[in-house]
Amino acid sequence: MVLFEAGGVFLLALLALWLFALVDVITTPAAACRNLPKLLWIVLVVLLPDLGSILWLLLGRPRRAARARRTDYTQPRPPIAIEDHPGYTATTNVTDRRSAELDKQIEEWEARQRELELERHERELDGE
Image 1 (cartoon, rainbow, N blue to C red):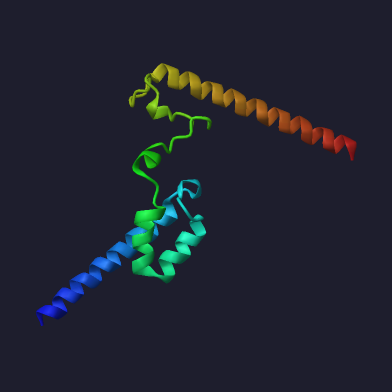
Image 2: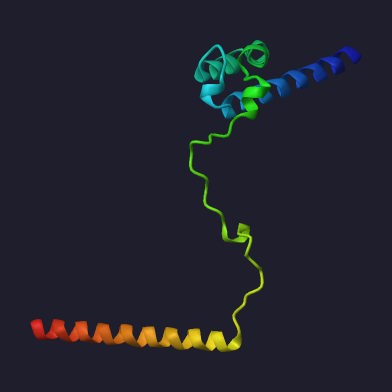
């Protein structure tokens, strides 16, 4: 019975090793794979789980220094979100007076839009 339990633990360890190796191969950039192309490493790890996983860890996985240098400085930086801007505050600075001014401005824009639509509609009726 003890032998069966030890075998079960060994089986779980091999399964964990295989899953780790498979996920690691998939998430590793193709340019960082050593000795074989990435697709061949995936096939090797899937078809020969134990041996493929060990070979990946020893021969295919990028070295630690190569993994740390993943940043590509030639690519443009992603835009900074508004929350990340140093001048951002979570509280709004809109006062009641400013809110009323903005509401009035929106009403004026909407009225102008209605006038333009009415003029366009009249031109269409005159043209037909």
